[in-house]
Image (cartoon, rainbow, N blue to C red; front, side, top):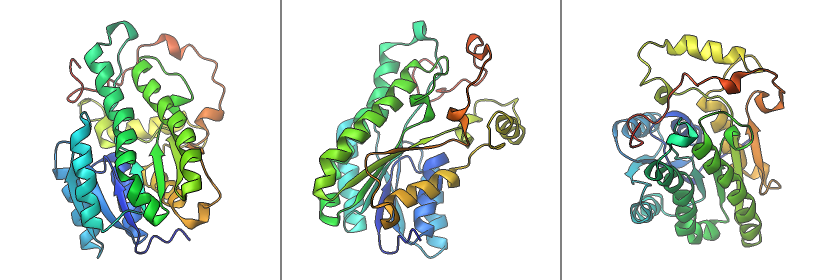
Length: 276
């Protein structure tokens, strides 16, 4: 099941978090993996080393997704390393918690450039290779596209755009042999969530998060990776243009509380979004 032996895969934003899990998941299924990162190479190089140590093939590629030209260069470099392309996973993205009235034009543009414009034009740049291989695209969105959470007006908009983009792109490319689907992950705590919260115990925070999820636990990057590998495999050949919600039942729950009146404790965006 979900055999990726010999497949050539590019995963964006794969140095940390969900992207890291997806890159490792594809490698463990037998794929050759190009690991994209945006700034610090340490995480991506660690992923590459882990894949190589396990007998796989991988390399890291840098591109700042705030601009279009670097991602186009990265696309060419990744294809040259891989010898073509069978699967593109558009995972890279940034988030930010910010009251609506305090969002700046610079912050708004950065999130839309990285989260929407970059996957759009990266997929466009790689389309010739995907058509040759009759490949697959997996777009990573979020349950923020489906459910509201305060101080996420910009981020939620970008994730909703991905779902709409995914649906339209899928019907354009399906007749050309390229399958396109998306994943909307629920709570999947990763290291970036806690790096700017020195007083928080990550393990306890993860356990506490799980108490609010119907299944009783928070997701892991591997949970998302399993679905990404499935959507790229032949086992999902009849799934086209869909967004699979992987959230432990979160969006199936109808909450009745005043949580929307409370300012979120978790502040995201520090260190990579200007003004945060």
